[in-house]
Length: 426
View 1: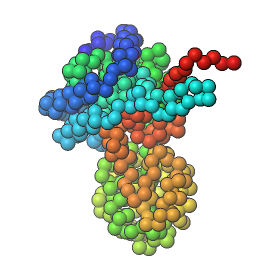
View 2: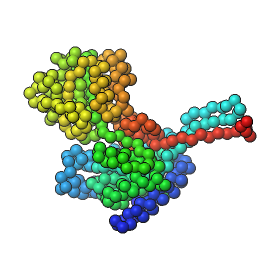
View 3: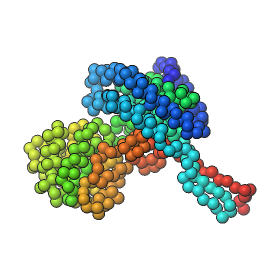
View 4: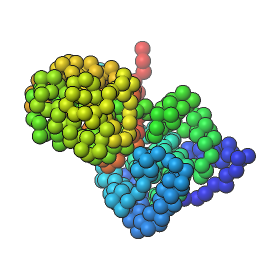
């Protein structure tokens, strides 16, 4: 990936140049058939595998610097690449390559009484700016999804993952070259200067959509300052509700996985609700599992009564995304009380019910106002790869344009193509 010279004095000019190159690349990508995009994605995946040691060395450098600066544990965990995570990046690019190409898809078509034939056809958004923190794998996911959906990408990774992201971006550039596509299809902002974010948020002539991925502070800043449309989620305050007709062993598996598989991701459960009807049989085992696994439990009076290790829950705990081994836990009176709690305190991200009662499950699935709702499954399935999208740029909690996992199809718009035979309007 070609580097652009950057100093404080010429940052504005550098960002404008980067944006202009992205706009030119987007015009090329909009008309590229599926073949070259697939070739580029597969070649990039091969480059990631071939340059695994180089990527790992760059990541080790970033992790060491992050620990020296005292970066919080969950952030270090997100930053860290392992052999499995590097392989997952390569596999994700191959899965994206294998997806049907969304561009040119006819979403709907009809013929009017006057003979006009109308089609609604899927098209790229144009240039997408992605601003993210910590996770260097977002470089591969975002670049791959933008390419598949015919969009040019301007990527601004976090300063803590600067070297890792550049090593990964270099592999994406290698894939683009192999397919004969412009390297400017995927560009990484070549500076850690935070002022670059401010420039991106005002580059309306070059960038069509901004996607922030990171902590609440970053996303709030982008939402407040951007002069460009934003696809976002503010946080992942996710819930698991164990209903009166939940099988205990199933509930134990789902709750433990939802909270403890990876505590630092936005799909990790932050609140456990247990139906009062089964509090005597289900609450103590669920709480003990979490505590024994090293998770701090903050509970209401009913929860504190089952284990002396439980800490008192505060009102703010119900609204907190911990991204750590901490969970709020409470007892509620049935499915309607659980739904009310989730809709009041949740972030409209991902919420789950565990039950063998189909009517209760359907009530929860239809009345919880979240981008993803699950029945008898862990909230950690809130992931584009698990949805068969290959990868995702993020989980949108917005209600306009995209909601839930944002994959290649969600990074498109549409236009109307109308074919006539000389009709005029009276």
